[in-house]
Amino acid sequence: MKRDLTSGSITRNIWHLSIPMIIGNLLQNTFSFVDMIFVGRLGPDAIAAVAMSGIMLSMIFTVAIGISMGTVALVARYTGARKMDAIENVTIQSLWLGIIGSLLIGWIGYYFAEAILKLLGASPEVVSRGVPYIRISFFGSFTMFFSVALGAALRGVGDAITPTKMLAGSTVLNIALDPLLIFGIWRFPELGIAGSAWATVITRGIGTLYLFRKCSNGRGFFTLRLRHAQFDWLTMKAILKIGVFGSVQAILRNLSGVVLMRIVAIYGTTTVAAYGIGMRLQFMIMMPGFGIGNAVATLVGQNLGAGKPDRAERTAKIATGWGWLIMTVGGIGYILFAEPLIRIFNTDPEVVRQGMLYLRVTAGAIGLIGISIILSRAFNGAGDTLSPMTITGIALFLLRIPLALGGARLWHVFGLFLGIAGSTFLQAMIMIFWFHKGHWKHKEIG
Image (cartoon, rainbow, N blue to C red; front, top):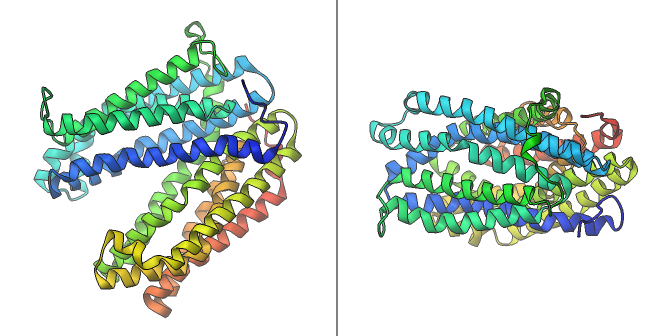
């Protein structure tokens, strides 16, 4: 039974979509975590090869994020307007964009993998292991693009269950394939870290076939028909017009992260370790915010498509309240249990002390991170990706980095962490201000 997300209880609709999306986010993290566990058994060179390769692989995710945002915004809007043929067309065009993107990225990965790893300072051993890993991953990038495009279309129509089932099955299969292909267990070849890349490509490929089947069997929220698979440049342009700012936003976050890590590194390896652990713990508590935010993108888009901008606004407000509450409770937990949480990762006394300092200084702002995430996704769902990109750029480069530097000069590590927390507060305030301006409710897309 298809649920009408433009009527009924707003809170129930939020949780109807949010819960499977939160689970999906956790599964995606498990996907990467399992890979690193098995690769870690191959030694430091293997870990370094995968870590450095991750910088190149972020290219795939950055492009895929843009296609996903454009697809969700358009599909959600057309779902609210009950334009089913337009939903099918947007999905098909996002798949064409995935083909184009994977061909381009596959070419880059094949010909420039070695040069880029050397540019990053990789040792000869890391290069020899990393090049096959990158080439396989980039060769199979079409599985990432297809699964992201189909998952975005399903979320846009309000089906969060099917993509989550795909992620669950892919994660279990990846856990099974990783040791077989990495270590050559039973009759499988011993491929080292290249086996990890093949396991990921294979499992994502199987997951993509599952999504294709669900989207084309005539029993889902919409039906894909191959006879309609023609190019529609105007729709592709509409997807890219929305998605490009989402991709730029991801690039800005990565760049600011590099700059901030360079600032943290001034205070030595211990501070870097403490900061890294704190960031990982903080990212874990952000999972509910991402899940609720992705649900809001769909709900806002559908309500705007149905001509209900006031309901779209109420939905975003209620969801933001829930996200703030859940993440604030998590932040309080970090304050109370900072020491045992840090010790899970490292028991060095100085790392523990600085890690506790990071958690306790920034914990009060975790709820505000939830506000920024959810309102940003609300803008995205309305098709306004320029606003969150601009606000994010201002918050990261004109607020966070200067405040972190200024705080560090005054109060050293404490001031550095305080500057990070302060910029989080200011970013949330800007998001709230722009949300209440209401321009996003009148965004024309498609």
